[in-house]
Amino acid sequence: MELSPESPTPELQPGQLLARGVCRHMLSHGFVTVEELVPTGGLRVDVMALGPKGEVWVIECKSSRADYMADHKWQGYLEWCDRFFWAVDQDFPTELLPAETGLIIADPYDAEIIRMGPETKLAAARRKVMLQKFARHAALRLQALRDPRPSGLL
Image (tube, rainbow, N blue to C red):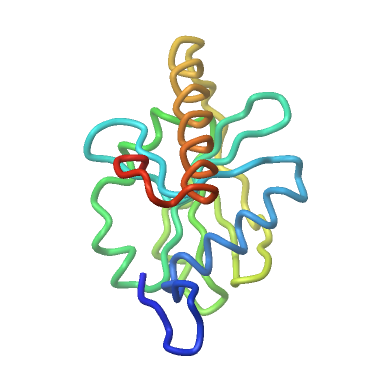
């Protein structure tokens, strides 16, 4: 992230802006979210959402056709969630996205679920791992906000 000369806060990239809108929308459905969670080595999901009944959803935010075409790892995310979604803006060519995945149209301020991804329930052991990763990731992010000096938090 880059800092703007006018603002001491980081400038958000297009995918991060989509993620912000997605996270706001998920909250309206009772889901809490974290961004950039690593479920396993070599994978980093844009948004992981945890539902009120323990549902685990992964949402990949794609800001352009090129961004989508460069993503060769998305199928690896399927084994780490109950549902998988793409989040794109209204100008994205959605016909590129696999029909068997969820679709969210987003902007920096909100989003709308257009198509639900199919549900594939996580095994109990995998769900426990993901809930622990989610909790740890969220706690480390909160600690980093309160005390940005300690190294190695994130």
